Length: 454
Image (cartoon, rainbow, N blue to C red; front, side, top):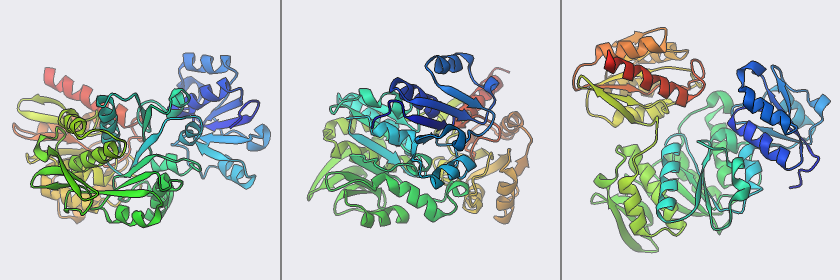
């Protein structure tokens, strides 16, 4: 892909947009970077560096396609494809790529790519740990951490790129071809972006669109929508299941996570010895083990990694115990299904903090789980009203609606007694009150630590 002197317009000046601008400028492209935020909202050093490298910055408005005449557009995950400039670009036949698609065209490393509604970050980090424990040089990034474009070109065929991929990133991929693709589960999410569950599934399915018989597709057998995708791929399919003994694949038998491939069963690790707990994390562990297996990692390494991997920040992260109450940061629970899994992970009484920016989700199943598992729920943010309606419909009335996140944490702490858990698992996006879920989780931890020293 020759980028020299090609006019490229990037929409979105978050991490992936800035990384793409740097990369494209180094390749000799004529680069425009556009964001609707004001110039003052960005770090001066970052802006100066980009401008010194010849990047033209357009802030506070949409860039004009007719004026810039781009030959290629790179769009950041948070930018909807329905904005006027992108619609105009489509009409003109201008290619629109995600940063991940761009990066994949400049790397020699085989890619292991993880998507799904829930569990992506934990599984991505665990797979990265597995390859590190196996002595491989590995890049871990994509939708988490460092954008792929930052290091893609430096990776060799002997290295491995382990990438978390969101539906937003996948919907603008075209030649993207993972060596191993994982779809962990599919439940309704981002309906406000994709229009329907079917649209969301189609975005996820792009992960295997270009795979062939030399590649692997790892699917959750217990998830109906995921299981059905096996009929649509040319790749070799491996299932994992925590509810069934499979003829071939990864499953639990007599309490042992087991791999059965080509008729041979190999015990990998006792389920109770896997460090990260909860039924959803058992699924994540099986998916990660399958990915390591197809990429040639020894069973002994899989055993060690599964027993020692401690999880990721903002996903069922234990913050501290104060006066007998455990405070758990699950800020990455950004949809109802993720928060249901968080509630299911504990047996102690739970005071739940939920709410944020709704993504068009159905909160009723979440409300039923709240009724079953929570002694109280504190609601905050734009989505609080929708969750309140759902819990009332479910016949649950131990809810408290507050105006600020600080009030939410203080109220939850006042409701909890020794032996309880205060769980932040919002079931919503963070963009109404915070920059992202990481920011929300950091604020929660800061507020909890302040409680502990009062």
